[in-house]
Length: 117
Image (cartoon, rainbow, N blue to C red; front, side, top):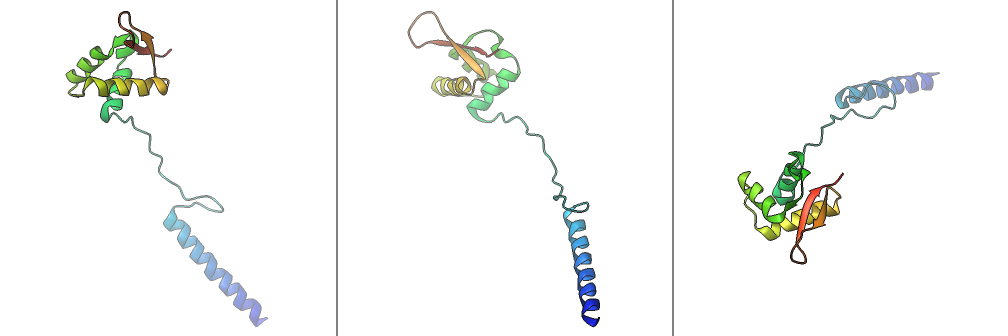
């Protein structure tokens, strides 16, 4: 009998400790996991690829644009990148299927970039 009372006392102490931990962790009751604040993923517009995403969100690529046109628009936005860097950012956007590229009349290897439908 004395052992039963000791066990019940220990169980009550453990329950109190668990309740206090649940309060500290923000857990409601039972087997719920601690509540975490969910943050919305914000658009990352840093770097050359971010500049391309910014122009994409502004519907700049509704009509086909050459690399030079994209570079000059980024300069207007205050983003000064070399044309080769802008071309690589555009190619990455094509690989991620954000943009598609069309052969631009003229020399081989010249492309126009447009928003993917």
